[in-house]
Image 1: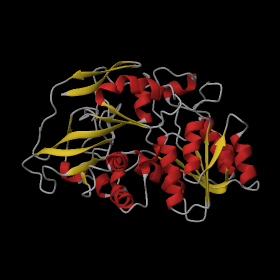
Image 2 (image 1 turned 135 degrees about the horizontal axis):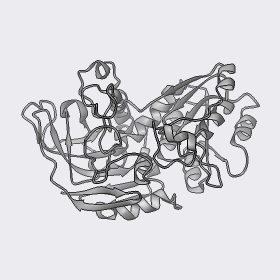
Image 3 (image 1 turned 60 degrees about the vertical axis):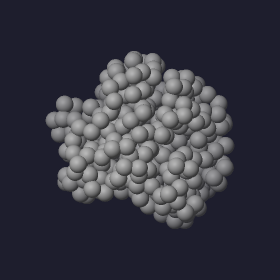
Image 4 (image 1 turned 120 degrees about the vertical axis):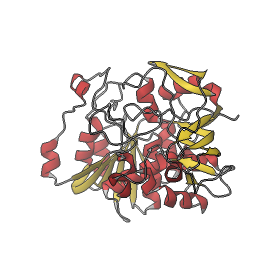
Length: 384
């Protein structure tokens, strides 16, 4: 089968690899028809993680079931399914508590002895191949496959967002504690930040502010009723304080991660975290879903080599704020969000800029990584 293979920093290629296949009776084999390039993929693409050469990218996947193992009961051949990027077992202590991002069964203990969590095509999260390919093996398929409504084939661009970014954006607002009628500031208007804004609008936030500097992304934020804030035009903290009458936002969302950088391009891994502490009111809540890693092989900031940042903990403590953080437990949200899409209440495909055949992946990675104008979200179509 064809797959997007990582050969080294900024070097991916579509190559033939051994076909994915049923390995255990609980497996499901899915023929991938839509698979997204994620901002998290760019950390790996740039060589800023220890993702192995020869590994296959792709953790935002949708397709049609091609084969099921003998122990699979609920999922049937021909079903259209969205596949959470988390690989959970469904029966460990964490999965039973709804914490599928921290599964104890599927984790790769070679990373750290007490590792929790696994994902497709993701650094340090197990030996599982990604789905930017023709086929994907889904372990514990009854648990991990979300069956989709009859309109799934026609609305793939919406439903594929259930694999990661729509639940992740929603999760960020949950971590922040957002309630109807509250204001929220979101740092980052990439796909996850835009999904956090979409979630906040659906949940009834009174004001949704989105900080970025890319005009195309800020336009998308404005298109759903959010207030765009261009941090290249002045301090985003000052702009938030002005919009909130000097009080600060009720809630804040970090959707950038450790490669945050200023308008001149210099990286500051602590930039958005400290701006959020300043932008959010006393006793406010902050949700963090932007990726932060335990180490960075090629840091611009020496301290971040070990995954550490200079954090304004004094002001954070003084303001009595709270922080929630970590990867999204997709299974906790994806059924409800599927139904929001099905009924037309949510339309996460508004961020999609490009639908391309799988063979165009290397070119798509280059454009998306460069943040070229108009490249806001790319969906690869292996069957095209």
